[in-house]
Image 1 (cartoon, rainbow, N blue to C red):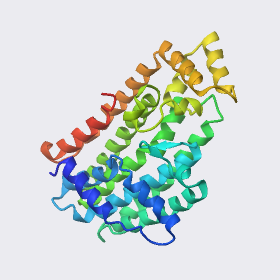
Image 2 (cartoon, one colour):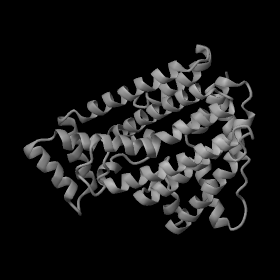
Image 3 (cartoon, rainbow, N blue to C red):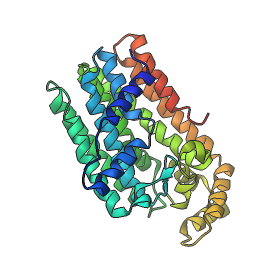
Image 4 (tube, rainbow, N blue to C red):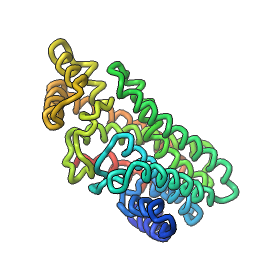
Length: 324
């Protein structure tokens, strides 16, 4: 089994060979800017790790893995427009550095480029890989729509929220793993187990993201903290607080949510104080641990030797230890 860092190097090398120095410059330069503003490359690494669990040959998985990274960055680019987010990974977002129209067109092009890379999966699994990738892509869009609709509701349930983050975040992680497994010629049962490992890991990952938006150091987190509070985003933190707050505290929270004009810093501080009083951070962390445990139960079911699971297990653990 190759280690995470060696696989990251494989991904970075392949991304470096993507040539977007073509015309029109204002369409392709934002794509290079986005891909070169290096993220953790979690999804393509997961694809290669999953492939390597079942096969010593990972070369056939490299282009599809990079395609998933291009797709992921496309979703972030459009997500930043919808959220009017000024910063991504410590740098200005594309719609801020250029403009919204350019960001939309560049994002659309990234989606097509992602398909061109995923389409290079081997013939023996190409149909299955493309069908899975298409379902993942639609799921991400469905999740984003639920997320947008939730912004205008104060009655979002925990069940609805988990469904939303499953679609918006988890299906891509799960799909990345299953695509790698399919290319590695995993059997049907193992491919399903690795998919559900990713699905539950992704839910835990997003729940931690909710926590980090409130409590992390922005220099470490890579984006401005408190953004979800400012935007009234229905995170697990807010849903839990709305469910548990009573009387004066609930009235205060609803008042903060209903204000159209406010000082951002003051709102973040006030909502954070309510979260602290309700132990919302601890509740969110406990829920993340619940899904983390489910994830590793599925990983344990995969019928390969323990040493072949270890790297994926360690990476999963590292994704869930971002608060340290």
